[in-house]
Length: 486
Image 1: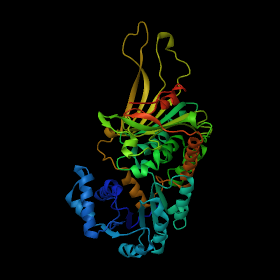
Image 2: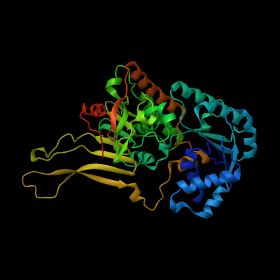
Image 3: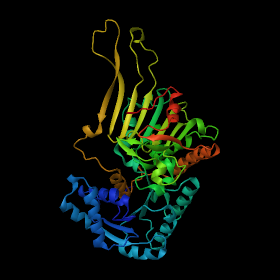
Image 4: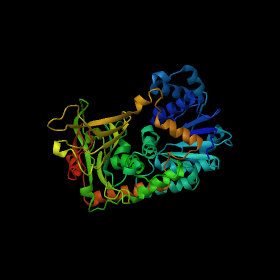
Protein backbone atom coordinates (compact mmCIF):
# COMPACT_ATOMS: atom_id res chain seq x y z
CA UNK A 1 0.00 0.00 0.00
CA UNK A 2 1.37 3.39 -1.00
CA UNK A 3 1.91 5.84 1.82
CA UNK A 4 3.45 9.21 0.83
CA UNK A 5 5.96 10.68 3.24
CA UNK A 6 6.09 14.27 4.43
CA UNK A 7 9.88 14.68 4.37
CA UNK A 8 12.73 13.85 2.01
CA UNK A 9 16.42 13.68 2.95
CA UNK A 10 19.05 13.88 0.21
CA UNK A 11 22.59 12.68 0.92
CA UNK A 12 25.18 13.99 -1.53
CA UNK A 13 23.04 17.09 -2.00
CA UNK A 14 25.87 19.17 -3.49
CA UNK A 15 27.18 16.50 -5.86
CA UNK A 16 26.94 16.25 -9.64
CA UNK A 17 23.97 13.84 -9.53
CA UNK A 18 22.01 16.20 -7.31
CA UNK A 19 22.69 19.19 -9.54
CA UNK A 20 22.04 17.52 -12.88
CA UNK A 21 19.24 15.11 -12.00
CA UNK A 22 17.80 15.16 -8.48
CA UNK A 23 17.08 18.87 -8.02
CA UNK A 24 15.68 19.33 -11.57
CA UNK A 25 13.54 16.19 -11.11
CA UNK A 26 12.13 17.34 -7.78
CA UNK A 27 11.47 20.78 -9.23
CA UNK A 28 9.58 19.19 -12.14
CA UNK A 29 7.42 17.19 -9.74
CA UNK A 30 6.79 20.36 -7.72
CA UNK A 31 5.72 22.36 -10.77
CA UNK A 32 3.27 19.64 -11.81
CA UNK A 33 1.75 19.44 -8.33
CA UNK A 34 2.92 15.87 -7.75
CA UNK A 35 4.84 16.39 -4.52
CA UNK A 36 2.81 16.01 -1.33
CA UNK A 37 1.64 19.31 0.09
CA UNK A 38 4.07 20.50 2.70
CA UNK A 39 6.84 18.05 1.72
CA UNK A 40 10.18 19.41 2.93
CA UNK A 41 13.49 18.50 1.32
CA UNK A 42 16.62 18.52 3.47
CA UNK A 43 19.98 18.25 1.77
CA UNK A 44 23.15 17.09 3.46
CA UNK A 45 26.81 16.72 2.43
CA UNK A 46 30.23 17.69 3.71
CA UNK A 47 30.03 21.10 2.03
CA UNK A 48 29.33 23.95 4.40
CA UNK A 49 26.02 25.68 3.71
CA UNK A 50 23.16 27.15 5.66
CA UNK A 51 19.60 27.12 4.33
CA UNK A 52 19.98 30.39 2.43
CA UNK A 53 23.29 29.52 0.73
CA UNK A 54 22.05 26.05 -0.21
CA UNK A 55 18.93 27.53 -1.78
CA UNK A 56 21.19 29.82 -3.79
CA UNK A 57 23.30 26.80 -4.76
CA UNK A 58 20.19 24.87 -5.82
CA UNK A 59 18.90 27.89 -7.74
CA UNK A 60 22.14 28.04 -9.73
CA UNK A 61 21.93 24.32 -10.48
CA UNK A 62 18.37 24.68 -11.74
CA UNK A 63 19.31 27.72 -13.83
CA UNK A 64 22.07 25.62 -15.43
CA UNK A 65 20.31 22.31 -16.01
CA UNK A 66 16.60 23.06 -16.41
CA UNK A 67 15.16 23.37 -19.93
CA UNK A 68 14.31 26.97 -20.81
CA UNK A 69 10.56 26.31 -20.88
CA UNK A 70 10.60 25.06 -17.28
CA UNK A 71 12.28 28.10 -15.75
CA UNK A 72 9.27 29.77 -14.18
CA UNK A 73 10.19 32.27 -11.44
CA UNK A 74 6.98 31.84 -9.44
CA UNK A 75 7.42 28.06 -9.26
CA UNK A 76 11.14 28.35 -8.61
CA UNK A 77 10.71 30.48 -5.51
CA UNK A 78 8.08 28.15 -4.06
CA UNK A 79 10.26 25.11 -4.73
CA UNK A 80 13.34 26.63 -3.11
CA UNK A 81 11.25 27.37 -0.01
CA UNK A 82 10.93 23.59 0.44
CA UNK A 83 14.71 23.23 0.75
CA UNK A 84 16.84 23.16 3.89
CA UNK A 85 20.42 22.05 4.50
CA UNK A 86 22.55 20.50 7.24
CA UNK A 87 26.30 19.87 6.83
CA UNK A 88 27.37 16.34 7.78
CA UNK A 89 30.49 14.19 7.75
CA UNK A 90 28.86 10.78 7.33
CA UNK A 91 32.01 8.94 8.41
CA UNK A 92 31.45 9.97 12.04
CA UNK A 93 28.34 9.47 14.11
CA UNK A 94 28.58 12.80 15.92
CA UNK A 95 26.69 14.92 13.40
CA UNK A 96 23.60 12.77 12.96
CA UNK A 97 21.77 14.16 16.00
CA UNK A 98 22.10 17.65 14.51
CA UNK A 99 20.75 16.29 11.23
CA UNK A 100 17.76 14.78 13.05
CA UNK A 101 17.12 18.09 14.81
CA UNK A 102 17.21 19.87 11.45
CA UNK A 103 14.70 17.47 9.89
CA UNK A 104 12.40 17.60 12.89
CA UNK A 105 9.31 15.48 13.43
CA UNK A 106 9.22 12.45 11.10
CA UNK A 107 5.91 11.03 12.27
CA UNK A 108 4.51 11.85 8.81
CA UNK A 109 7.13 9.61 7.20
CA UNK A 110 10.64 10.16 5.86
CA UNK A 111 12.24 9.04 2.58
CA UNK A 112 16.03 9.03 2.34
CA UNK A 113 17.97 9.15 -0.92
CA UNK A 114 21.47 7.84 -0.21
CA UNK A 115 24.12 8.56 -2.81
CA UNK A 116 27.49 8.04 -1.17
CA UNK A 117 30.73 6.08 -1.40
CA UNK A 118 30.30 2.35 -0.60
CA UNK A 119 32.70 2.71 2.34
CA UNK A 120 30.24 5.12 3.99
CA UNK A 121 27.15 2.91 3.77
CA UNK A 122 27.59 1.18 7.12
CA UNK A 123 28.50 4.30 9.18
CA UNK A 124 25.71 6.27 7.49
CA UNK A 125 23.12 3.60 8.24
CA UNK A 126 24.30 3.36 11.86
CA UNK A 127 24.24 7.13 12.18
CA UNK A 128 20.67 7.29 10.91
CA UNK A 129 19.64 4.58 13.36
CA UNK A 130 21.34 6.28 16.33
CA UNK A 131 19.59 9.57 15.57
CA UNK A 132 16.11 8.03 15.31
CA UNK A 133 15.96 8.36 11.52
CA UNK A 134 15.34 4.69 10.75
CA UNK A 135 11.94 3.95 12.25
CA UNK A 136 9.05 2.03 10.77
CA UNK A 137 7.87 5.05 8.77
CA UNK A 138 11.29 5.67 7.15
CA UNK A 139 12.29 4.20 3.78
CA UNK A 140 15.68 4.45 2.07
CA UNK A 141 16.68 4.68 -1.59
CA UNK A 142 20.18 3.46 -2.47
CA UNK A 143 22.05 4.80 -5.48
CA UNK A 144 24.73 2.60 -7.08
CA UNK A 145 27.47 1.48 -6.88
CA UNK A 146 26.25 -1.19 -4.48
CA UNK A 147 29.53 -3.06 -4.27
CA UNK A 148 32.04 -4.24 -6.85
CA UNK A 149 31.36 -7.98 -6.59
CA UNK A 150 28.98 -10.40 -4.87
CA UNK A 151 30.86 -10.36 -1.55
CA UNK A 152 30.98 -6.56 -1.24
CA UNK A 153 27.37 -6.27 -2.40
CA UNK A 154 26.29 -8.69 0.32
CA UNK A 155 28.28 -6.69 2.86
CA UNK A 156 26.44 -3.49 1.89
CA UNK A 157 23.07 -5.25 1.79
CA UNK A 158 23.72 -6.79 5.21
CA UNK A 159 24.59 -3.36 6.64
CA UNK A 160 21.36 -1.90 5.25
CA UNK A 161 19.26 -4.90 6.37
CA UNK A 162 20.43 -4.52 9.97
CA UNK A 163 18.36 -1.33 10.12
CA UNK A 164 16.02 -1.23 7.09
CA UNK A 165 14.00 -4.33 6.15
CA UNK A 166 13.67 -5.21 2.48
CA UNK A 167 10.19 -3.68 2.13
CA UNK A 168 11.64 -0.28 3.11
CA UNK A 169 14.76 -0.57 0.93
CA UNK A 170 14.61 0.87 -2.60
CA UNK A 171 17.66 0.10 -4.79
CA UNK A 172 17.87 2.46 -7.73
CA UNK A 173 18.69 1.62 -11.34
CA UNK A 174 17.81 4.77 -13.24
CA UNK A 175 17.27 2.83 -16.49
CA UNK A 176 14.10 1.40 -14.97
CA UNK A 177 12.70 4.94 -14.77
CA UNK A 178 12.90 5.46 -18.53
CA UNK A 179 9.54 5.53 -20.29
CA UNK A 180 10.70 3.26 -23.11
CA UNK A 181 11.96 0.65 -20.66
CA UNK A 182 8.56 0.57 -19.00
CA UNK A 183 7.02 0.30 -22.47
CA UNK A 184 8.66 -3.11 -22.82
CA UNK A 185 6.04 -4.40 -20.39
CA UNK A 186 3.22 -2.59 -22.20
CA UNK A 187 4.40 -3.90 -25.56
CA UNK A 188 4.70 -7.50 -24.40
CA UNK A 189 1.76 -7.88 -22.07
CA UNK A 190 -0.68 -5.38 -23.54
CA UNK A 191 -0.68 -6.70 -27.12
CA UNK A 192 -1.79 -10.19 -28.15
CA UNK A 193 0.26 -9.77 -31.32
CA UNK A 194 3.63 -10.44 -29.66
CA UNK A 195 3.35 -12.77 -26.68
CA UNK A 196 2.48 -15.98 -28.61
CA UNK A 197 5.78 -15.66 -30.54
CA UNK A 198 7.86 -14.27 -27.68
CA UNK A 199 9.80 -17.50 -27.11
CA UNK A 200 12.28 -19.93 -28.64
CA UNK A 201 9.74 -21.02 -31.25
CA UNK A 202 9.33 -17.51 -32.60
CA UNK A 203 12.55 -15.62 -31.81
CA UNK A 204 15.97 -16.32 -33.34
CA UNK A 205 18.08 -14.04 -31.14
CA UNK A 206 18.04 -10.85 -29.07
CA UNK A 207 20.58 -8.00 -29.12
CA UNK A 208 20.96 -5.37 -26.41
CA UNK A 209 23.32 -2.46 -27.10
CA UNK A 210 24.22 0.48 -24.89
CA UNK A 211 26.90 2.53 -26.67
CA UNK A 212 28.37 5.84 -25.58
CA UNK A 213 30.46 8.36 -27.50
CA UNK A 214 31.93 9.91 -24.33
CA UNK A 215 35.11 8.89 -22.56
CA UNK A 216 35.92 9.27 -18.87
CA UNK A 217 34.17 12.64 -18.48
CA UNK A 218 35.58 13.31 -15.00
CA UNK A 219 34.80 9.78 -13.72
CA UNK A 220 38.35 8.41 -13.97
CA UNK A 221 38.66 7.46 -10.29
CA UNK A 222 35.43 5.48 -10.25
CA UNK A 223 35.50 4.07 -13.75
CA UNK A 224 39.04 2.68 -13.75
CA UNK A 225 38.19 0.67 -10.66
CA UNK A 226 34.94 -0.51 -12.19
CA UNK A 227 35.04 -1.00 -15.96
CA UNK A 228 32.24 -1.57 -18.43
CA UNK A 229 31.21 -5.00 -17.10
CA UNK A 230 30.48 -3.70 -13.60
CA UNK A 231 29.37 -0.21 -14.63
CA UNK A 232 26.85 -1.15 -17.33
CA UNK A 233 26.31 -4.89 -17.75
CA UNK A 234 25.81 -5.82 -14.08
CA UNK A 235 22.89 -3.44 -13.64
CA UNK A 236 21.37 -1.72 -16.67
CA UNK A 237 21.88 -4.43 -19.28
CA UNK A 238 20.87 -7.36 -17.12
CA UNK A 239 17.75 -5.48 -16.03
CA UNK A 240 16.83 -4.93 -19.68
CA UNK A 241 17.47 -8.61 -20.40
CA UNK A 242 15.25 -9.60 -17.49
CA UNK A 243 12.38 -7.41 -18.72
CA UNK A 244 12.63 -8.87 -22.22
CA UNK A 245 12.89 -12.48 -21.03
CA UNK A 246 10.58 -12.57 -17.98
CA UNK A 247 7.39 -14.64 -17.81
CA UNK A 248 4.10 -12.73 -17.64
CA UNK A 249 3.59 -11.56 -14.05
CA UNK A 250 0.22 -12.24 -12.43
CA UNK A 251 -0.31 -8.53 -11.78
CA UNK A 252 1.43 -5.18 -12.16
CA UNK A 253 3.00 -4.73 -8.76
CA UNK A 254 6.46 -4.73 -7.25
CA UNK A 255 6.34 -8.27 -5.91
CA UNK A 256 4.99 -10.02 -9.00
CA UNK A 257 7.23 -8.21 -11.49
CA UNK A 258 10.41 -8.62 -9.46
CA UNK A 259 9.61 -12.29 -8.78
CA UNK A 260 9.64 -12.93 -12.53
CA UNK A 261 12.78 -10.88 -13.14
CA UNK A 262 14.79 -12.75 -10.55
CA UNK A 263 13.76 -16.08 -12.10
CA UNK A 264 15.38 -14.93 -15.36
CA UNK A 265 18.55 -13.74 -13.65
CA UNK A 266 18.88 -17.05 -11.82
CA UNK A 267 18.38 -18.88 -15.13
CA UNK A 268 21.31 -17.17 -16.85
CA UNK A 269 23.74 -19.87 -17.94
CA UNK A 270 27.03 -19.36 -16.05
CA UNK A 271 29.93 -18.50 -18.33
CA UNK A 272 32.65 -20.91 -17.22
CA UNK A 273 36.36 -20.10 -17.51
CA UNK A 274 36.74 -22.54 -20.40
CA UNK A 275 34.02 -20.67 -22.34
CA UNK A 276 34.96 -17.07 -21.52
CA UNK A 277 37.24 -16.57 -24.58
CA UNK A 278 34.50 -17.78 -26.96
CA UNK A 279 31.49 -16.10 -25.30
CA UNK A 280 32.93 -12.75 -24.19
CA UNK A 281 34.97 -9.93 -25.72
CA UNK A 282 36.66 -7.20 -23.73
CA UNK A 283 38.17 -4.04 -25.22
CA UNK A 284 39.70 -0.66 -24.43
CA UNK A 285 39.44 2.38 -26.68
CA UNK A 286 42.47 3.87 -28.35
CA UNK A 287 42.84 7.21 -30.09
CA UNK A 288 40.46 8.07 -32.90
CA UNK A 289 37.73 10.43 -33.99
CA UNK A 290 34.21 10.65 -32.56
CA UNK A 291 31.70 12.78 -34.45
CA UNK A 292 34.58 14.35 -36.34
CA UNK A 293 36.54 15.31 -33.22
CA UNK A 294 39.93 13.76 -32.48
CA UNK A 295 40.05 12.11 -29.05
CA UNK A 296 42.76 10.49 -26.96
CA UNK A 297 43.15 6.87 -25.97
CA UNK A 298 41.80 5.69 -22.62
CA UNK A 299 45.28 5.29 -21.12
CA UNK A 300 46.19 8.81 -22.26
CA UNK A 301 43.05 10.26 -20.67
CA UNK A 302 43.80 8.30 -17.52
CA UNK A 303 47.48 9.33 -17.72
CA UNK A 304 48.67 5.82 -16.85
CA UNK A 305 48.52 2.30 -18.29
CA UNK A 306 45.41 0.31 -17.38
CA UNK A 307 43.85 -3.09 -18.00
CA UNK A 308 40.31 -1.80 -17.34
CA UNK A 309 37.81 -2.65 -20.08
CA UNK A 310 35.82 0.14 -21.72
CA UNK A 311 33.96 -2.31 -23.99
CA UNK A 312 32.26 -5.65 -23.38
CA UNK A 313 30.37 -7.99 -25.68
CA UNK A 314 28.78 -11.18 -24.37
CA UNK A 315 26.82 -14.08 -25.82
CA UNK A 316 24.44 -15.11 -23.06
CA UNK A 317 21.74 -17.79 -22.69
CA UNK A 318 18.69 -18.07 -20.45
CA UNK A 319 18.28 -21.72 -19.58
CA UNK A 320 14.54 -22.21 -19.30
CA UNK A 321 11.77 -23.57 -21.50
CA UNK A 322 10.84 -20.22 -23.07
CA UNK A 323 14.36 -19.29 -24.20
CA UNK A 324 16.19 -22.58 -24.71
CA UNK A 325 18.72 -22.16 -27.51
CA UNK A 326 18.07 -18.43 -28.07
CA UNK A 327 21.27 -16.35 -27.77
CA UNK A 328 21.18 -12.93 -26.11
CA UNK A 329 23.99 -10.74 -27.44
CA UNK A 330 24.98 -7.91 -25.09
CA UNK A 331 27.26 -5.05 -26.11
CA UNK A 332 28.32 -1.85 -24.37
CA UNK A 333 31.24 0.51 -24.74
CA UNK A 334 32.62 4.02 -24.52
CA UNK A 335 33.95 6.16 -27.38
CA UNK A 336 31.87 4.24 -29.89
CA UNK A 337 30.52 5.30 -33.28
CA UNK A 338 27.15 6.50 -31.99
CA UNK A 339 25.27 7.05 -28.77
CA UNK A 340 22.36 4.64 -28.60
CA UNK A 341 20.59 2.29 -26.27
CA UNK A 342 18.35 -0.26 -27.92
CA UNK A 343 16.96 -3.75 -27.86
CA UNK A 344 16.72 -5.63 -31.16
CA UNK A 345 14.60 -8.78 -31.30
CA UNK A 346 14.91 -10.81 -34.48
CA UNK A 347 12.13 -13.28 -35.13
CA UNK A 348 12.63 -16.54 -36.95
CA UNK A 349 11.97 -16.63 -40.70
CA UNK A 350 8.71 -17.90 -42.11
CA UNK A 351 8.80 -21.72 -42.41
CA UNK A 352 8.25 -21.66 -46.19
CA UNK A 353 8.59 -18.82 -48.69
CA UNK A 354 6.02 -18.86 -51.48
CA UNK A 355 7.95 -16.05 -53.21
CA UNK A 356 11.32 -17.77 -53.71
CA UNK A 357 10.55 -19.17 -57.17
CA UNK A 358 9.54 -15.69 -58.31
CA UNK A 359 12.73 -14.06 -56.99
CA UNK A 360 11.22 -12.65 -53.83
CA UNK A 361 13.74 -12.53 -51.00
CA UNK A 362 12.49 -12.48 -47.44
CA UNK A 363 14.16 -11.04 -44.36
CA UNK A 364 13.14 -12.13 -40.85
CA UNK A 365 11.02 -9.62 -38.97
CA UNK A 366 12.89 -7.51 -36.44
CA UNK A 367 11.49 -5.51 -33.54
CA UNK A 368 13.69 -2.59 -32.46
CA UNK A 369 13.02 -0.84 -29.15
CA UNK A 370 15.13 2.33 -29.03
CA UNK A 371 15.65 3.83 -25.59
CA UNK A 372 17.92 6.75 -26.47
CA UNK A 373 18.67 9.22 -27.92
CA UNK A 374 15.33 8.88 -29.71
CA UNK A 375 12.52 6.85 -28.18
CA UNK A 376 10.67 4.59 -30.58
CA UNK A 377 9.42 1.12 -31.29
CA UNK A 378 10.04 -0.07 -34.86
CA UNK A 379 8.81 -3.33 -36.41
CA UNK A 380 10.57 -4.26 -39.65
CA UNK A 381 8.21 -6.21 -41.92
CA UNK A 382 8.26 -7.41 -45.52
CA UNK A 383 6.18 -5.62 -48.15
CA UNK A 384 5.84 -5.83 -51.93
CA UNK A 385 7.30 -3.00 -53.94
CA UNK A 386 4.77 -1.29 -56.24
CA UNK A 387 4.83 -2.59 -59.81
CA UNK A 388 3.40 -5.16 -62.22
CA UNK A 389 5.95 -7.85 -61.30
CA UNK A 390 5.81 -9.53 -64.73
CA UNK A 391 9.16 -11.25 -64.25
CA UNK A 392 9.84 -11.32 -60.53
CA UNK A 393 8.22 -10.27 -57.32
CA UNK A 394 10.17 -7.52 -55.59
CA UNK A 395 9.91 -7.52 -51.82
CA UNK A 396 11.43 -4.97 -49.47
CA UNK A 397 11.81 -4.58 -45.72
CA UNK A 398 9.82 -1.57 -44.48
CA UNK A 399 9.43 -0.13 -40.98
CA UNK A 400 6.24 0.21 -39.00
CA UNK A 401 7.21 3.03 -36.63
CA UNK A 402 5.85 4.16 -33.32
CA UNK A 403 7.78 7.26 -32.38
CA UNK A 404 7.03 8.01 -28.75
CA UNK A 405 8.37 11.55 -29.20
CA UNK A 406 5.88 12.14 -32.03
CA UNK A 407 2.92 10.09 -30.82
CA UNK A 408 2.99 11.70 -27.39
CA UNK A 409 4.24 15.10 -28.54
CA UNK A 410 1.84 16.88 -26.21
CA UNK A 411 3.16 15.06 -23.15
CA UNK A 412 6.33 16.27 -21.48
CA UNK A 413 9.13 13.70 -21.49
CA UNK A 414 10.26 13.20 -17.92
CA UNK A 415 13.70 12.58 -16.48
CA UNK A 416 13.94 8.99 -15.24
CA UNK A 417 14.71 10.25 -11.74
CA UNK A 418 11.38 12.12 -11.61
CA UNK A 419 9.48 8.84 -11.63
CA UNK A 420 11.92 7.11 -9.29
CA UNK A 421 11.95 9.93 -6.74
CA UNK A 422 8.16 10.14 -6.82
CA UNK A 423 7.88 6.36 -6.35
CA UNK A 424 10.31 6.56 -3.43
CA UNK A 425 8.28 9.37 -1.86
CA UNK A 426 5.01 7.47 -2.39
CA UNK A 427 6.42 4.04 -1.50
CA UNK A 428 5.91 2.14 -4.79
CA UNK A 429 8.71 -0.48 -5.14
CA UNK A 430 7.85 -1.71 -8.66
CA UNK A 431 10.71 0.03 -10.49
CA UNK A 432 13.36 -0.63 -7.85
CA UNK A 433 15.72 -3.59 -7.63
CA UNK A 434 15.35 -6.24 -4.95
CA UNK A 435 18.29 -7.76 -3.08
CA UNK A 436 17.93 -11.19 -4.67
CA UNK A 437 18.06 -9.57 -8.12
CA UNK A 438 21.26 -7.68 -7.32
CA UNK A 439 22.96 -10.77 -5.94
CA UNK A 440 21.93 -12.94 -8.90
CA UNK A 441 23.37 -10.29 -11.22
CA UNK A 442 26.66 -10.16 -9.32
CA UNK A 443 26.97 -13.95 -9.24
CA UNK A 444 26.81 -14.08 -13.03
CA UNK A 445 29.19 -11.13 -13.47
CA UNK A 446 31.75 -12.51 -11.01
CA UNK A 447 31.94 -15.76 -13.00
CA UNK A 448 32.80 -13.78 -16.14
CA UNK A 449 35.55 -11.86 -14.36
CA UNK A 450 36.92 -15.13 -13.00
CA UNK A 451 37.02 -16.46 -16.57
CA UNK A 452 38.92 -13.38 -17.75
CA UNK A 453 41.46 -13.84 -14.96
CA UNK A 454 41.85 -17.58 -15.60
CA UNK A 455 42.54 -16.97 -19.28
CA UNK A 456 44.64 -13.80 -18.83
CA UNK A 457 42.22 -11.97 -21.12
CA UNK A 458 43.48 -8.43 -21.64
CA UNK A 459 41.22 -5.83 -23.31
CA UNK A 460 41.61 -5.71 -27.09
CA UNK A 461 42.32 -2.27 -28.55
CA UNK A 462 39.69 -0.56 -30.68
CA UNK A 463 39.71 2.83 -32.34
CA UNK A 464 37.55 5.54 -30.83
CA UNK A 465 34.62 6.18 -33.14
CA UNK A 466 34.29 2.51 -34.12
CA UNK A 467 31.89 -0.22 -32.96
CA UNK A 468 34.49 -1.91 -30.78
CA UNK A 469 37.09 -4.65 -31.35
CA UNK A 470 36.80 -6.84 -34.43
CA UNK A 471 36.39 -9.82 -32.09
CA UNK A 472 32.95 -8.44 -31.16
CA UNK A 473 31.91 -8.75 -34.81
CA UNK A 474 33.21 -12.30 -34.91
CA UNK A 475 31.21 -13.12 -31.75
CA UNK A 476 27.97 -12.76 -33.72
CA UNK A 477 29.13 -13.46 -37.28
CA UNK A 478 30.14 -17.03 -36.50
CA UNK A 479 26.47 -17.59 -35.63
CA UNK A 480 25.37 -15.93 -38.87
CA UNK A 481 24.20 -12.84 -36.97
CA UNK A 482 25.09 -9.19 -37.62
CA UNK A 483 24.98 -6.48 -34.98
CA UNK A 484 22.12 -4.01 -35.44
CA UNK A 485 24.08 -0.81 -36.11
CA UNK A 486 22.75 2.50 -37.40
